[in-house]
Length: 240
Image (spheres, one colour):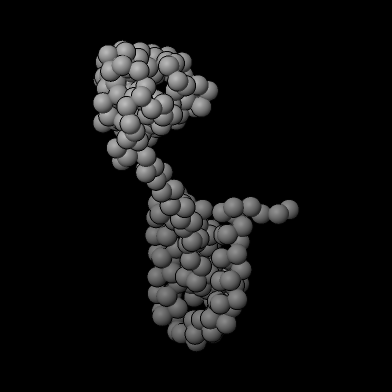
C-alpha cells in the first residue's frame, strides 16, 4: 500500500533514523552492559523518565510525530528492564529493546513542516486607473446614437470602477465645428446624456455621474470652422 502525505514523510524520517542510529544502538548497549548494577539501573531509570516525558509532551503526542511511538516503546521496555534489576537480574532482551527505542527516540526528528505557498501578489493596478481620460465614445456625424464599439468602451469603464476604486465619473459631450455653436452645444449635451444613461443601465448610480456639454469649444483635433471631424464628435469620460 502506498503511503501518502504526512504518513509517507514520517516513514521516510524513521527509515533515515534507522540508518543513522544502528551503530549507536550497538555501542550504547555494550556501554550499558559494561556498567555495574547500580550504574545500569540509574541509566535505565533516566531513559524511562525521558521516554515518559516525551510521551506526555503535547508537541509530540498531538502531532504526526514518530518520536511518540519510540517514546512509548522506551518507557515500556526500560520499565521492564528496571523491574528485572530489582532482583539484580540483567534481562538482555528488555535492556536491548530499551536501548534501541531510546536511540530511535533520540535520532528520529519531527517531520519537516511543509510551508504553505505564499499568497499570490495582488493584481497589478491597470495604467488606465491613473489616466486623465478613462474612456472616449465617438459618434457619427449629427448623431447621438452610441455605436457598437462605444458600448464596448463603456463596458470597460464600468469593469474598471471597482478595480481602480473610482467614486465618480465625469461625462463630457463634444462636437466638431460643423454647424452653429448653439446647435452643437445642444448636440453635445444630447450625446453626454446618452452616454450617462448607458452607464446607468450598466449599474453606475446617477449621483456618481457629472454630466456636462462643451459643444465645439474644446476640439480634440483643432480644425477650421465648419469642418466635419470624427475625432471631435465624442464624449469623454474622466474618473475620480
